[in-house]
Length: 116
Image 1 (cartoon, rainbow, N blue to C red):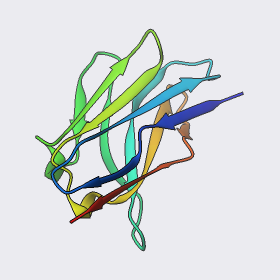
Image 2: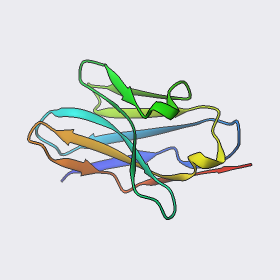
Image 3: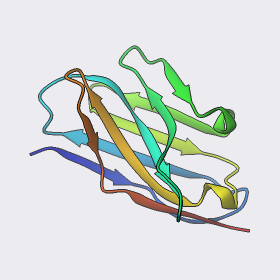
Image 4: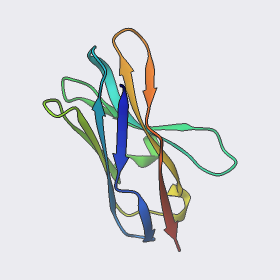
């Protein structure tokens, strides 16, 4: 059974930090990338950051310097450290596993709310 279990969402004031974590299980093939997307109310889902088996990573340009994505290959875990959070970061954050076969797997989403 494929599972992407996210944790770490919550509410924080502007300037605060949160760390999201996603544990992936039940997928027999390796990934091309693991990462995070988000969807704010009334908006489309957007790319946040992802990381590759080599350890390289990629970010939405506007989030560079505030968000850091990392992975533990042995545990099949991908984390997202979010610093200096702003109200516009409020969204549901989704974990993503993009497989070698070209399939996207998604977590159930975790809410992040930033108040001003």
